Image (cartoon, rainbow, N blue to C red):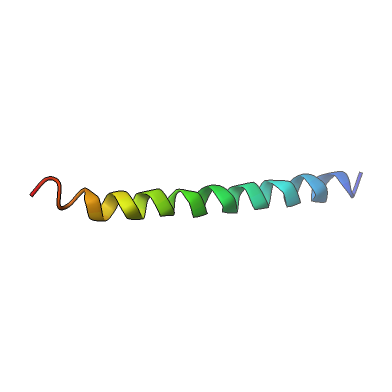
Length: 39
């Protein structure tokens, strides 16, 4: 049972870090493109 909780936490950590990493990438590209588009 002790291995179950840690195991679930481990997999949850990697996916979470992957999502934020991908989110900033597209956001960074859209950020620079968004400002020039409006003006």
